Length: 185
Figure 1 (spheres, rainbow, N blue to C red):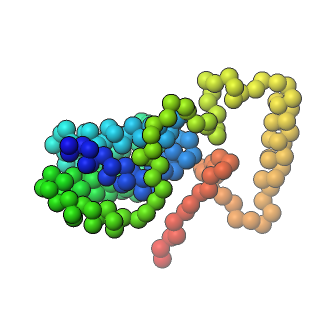
Figure 2 (figure 1 turned 30 degrees about the vertical axis):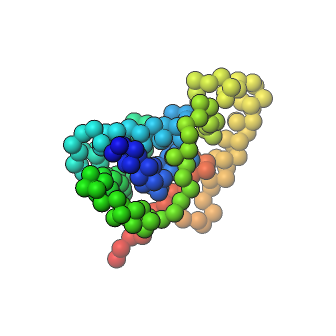
Figure 3 (figure 1 turned 45 degrees about the vertical axis):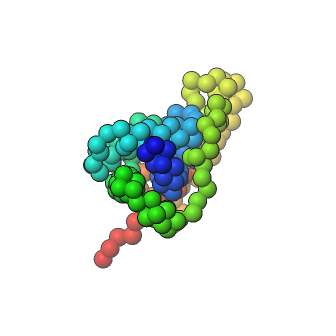
């Protein structure tokens, strides 16, 4: 009974979590990120209902799941915030405060509910390919010569034309943006 009430709340909270959403959208970790996120929600809900959990334990579990399943480490303290919110809702459910739970849920930001969709058997394609999958790799000489030509063009376009140089230790893959914080004076 408690699991049935708590699982939709876990789905809602994880639906609103930007780190998880970005990890799934960008194909982090293994193929089938959406299915993995759905299974993660089931696991978290069961873990909370079946165990006596504190915020640090749940936060560590969430951090481990994000790292193991999505190769993602959150440096923004969001796993602790997610853990605190989930435990707040779980405590209210255990105390029978269903009206308060509904009021808190209504106060959450509205978003697309992608985690509560049925789990599909199909695996979504990855944008970055899978090295073990023969369909994403090609070994034709034509592709190799195109890659060599593109590498030559890329190296010649990196000449500094009075622009501010990027940090040499930061390598950005195509499709990603480096976000830097402002330095405080």
